[in-house]
Length: 114
Length: 114
Image (cartoon, rainbow over all chains, first blue to last red; front, side):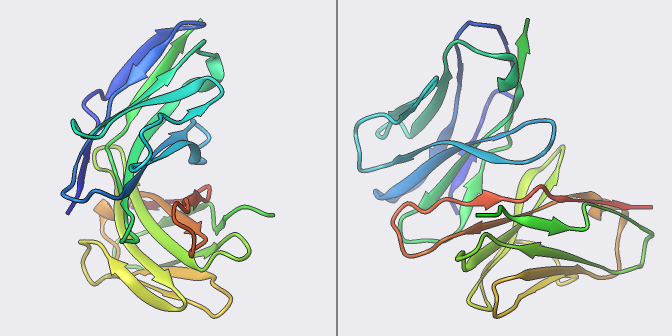
């Protein structure tokens, strides 16, 4: 089974600064998708950004961008100009292009310091 | 479109009882997955249903079961509750048929077993 590892249980960032959350995964497949989800204290999990493995260009959504390193099996999330509303648990997830199951990391709790 | 809905939002049960949780996916979504979320274990995959059939199953005991109806609504049942079943149970739906379809999560059902 694929595994997704988030090695940073907790991170903090000053408001307006930039923070990078790390994610690595283990797979023998070449075609897959990667996702970052955000779970604020209200508990509703929402999609932040997603990346297709066959696309070399890193995905970007406003202040959120990824650094996808396929050879290193690394998928980090960069949050620029951090805002108080970015405080949440962030989960990295993987899905094979030929499979239906999502594999999640254990999450990184992000604190934004005013 | 309305989002994924889950009922009830909170439940308190005692050991040995059974419980049924309900999930209504986003209209048009045929895949429904269930996850158990605990502080120490993160998101643990329970099972996925598609077109009323269980397509994937996680590593949980047989006390955990589910089903999906023809309108794609899904229920999850836990019998003979144990203290360790206390968790947030998340349901997620996704459309199928596109390459990078994404899971959309409901708000969760918080189950407390006393």
